[in-house]
Image (tube, rainbow, N blue to C red):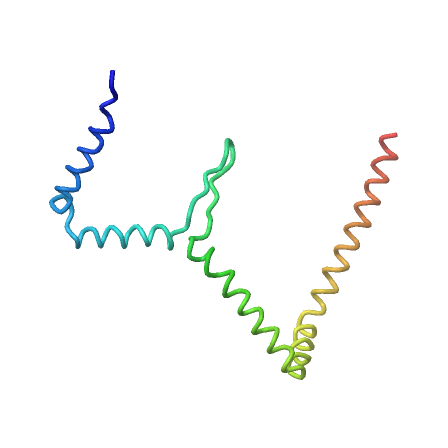
Length: 130
């Protein structure tokens, strides 16, 4: 028994080609392509989660492609500016530190005390359990 499927497939393709202009005009095709490009490049993507895991929103493809390129260029420009403007750089550092020094100190103290207090609590817990 001979396989007739390739012949059928070829006839279907030819038939679709012969009526393609009747099925969709160029203006409709143009709109479909615009919608497809918009969806492919500019809408956020959703990564399906596994069993028991939620879906994850991912950036659109345009962001994923373009942002790393420009991020590196911006980083380079900022680095160059900082090197060529040492007085302004020092002034910015002083300003940021003076505005945030108390927050930095409090956060550092909080981290150190939390670690110390946690260790102290663990020692007490272990002695009580023994």
